[in-house]
Length: 341
Image (tube, rainbow, N blue to C red; front, top):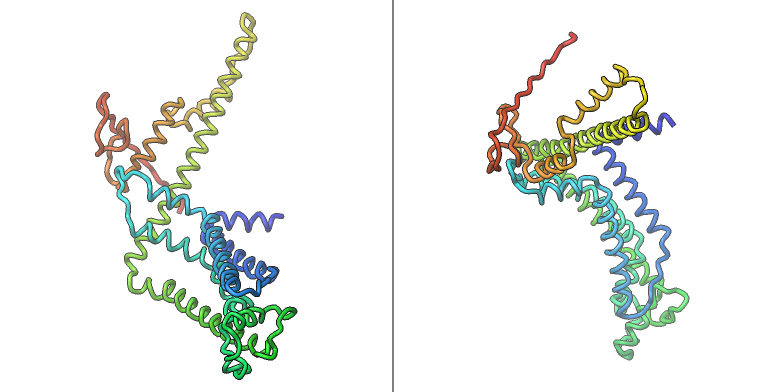
């Protein structure tokens, strides 16, 4: 159990490794789902192509959407895209980098599904069995005497061995081998092109746009870390707020129950604990102020300039339109670092 806990903590701390693991699991799952899938070609003209197209395209689309849904950065991308500009402008390059990173991982499982489907050949055989060149591979002398609809009806039954009755026109084994050969050739071509494209995107592209790539990568990580730290700070504040609120409730109840009777005074340790919890509230001690803080964080995030001392106004950071009220109070924070070397 300790090993699994360590692995889970590592994956939580390293989001990129976690998402790569999820994508690998989804890729294996897609191959396993296809192997367990019961492919049943309708063997009817006009229906074979629609059925095969659905099998080839719909599951990859579902897997792609699942890959996006399971990525934690989807909500972060949507939030960054739709948020008001405020005091921090939006960088389209960062948004593109975030979307491309998610799309690359989400495309792994659909690519595996398409590759396995083409290499297996059943879907391609069902889709294009009516396009087999009978004049070249079959009995060409019988072709002129058959109507086009009758020929299509016979060829559409090639994937269904138990009901195929056109051996006199073209041997089923010949048609199956011919179509599966083409399907496997397309499958390996698809794998080769996908691998080359992935190599170009992952290895070659940063070499030509290294500065822009590093900038987009840095600020993408910053947005992710900032969001996590804000959530952690809000969680810590909520815990302290709830603890102080509950303590006040119990103290009030204790006061009401013991009204008129002598009761022990609160100890110094409990008073210090309550003061420590109040310190974690950062002066936000009521619901309205907290709601205003959250609204200001959404509408006007602080600018990315740490070297400037800017006053906090009622509606956000300096630089915006100040609301009515007294003049803002300058706040200054000093941090001291000690080295143990």
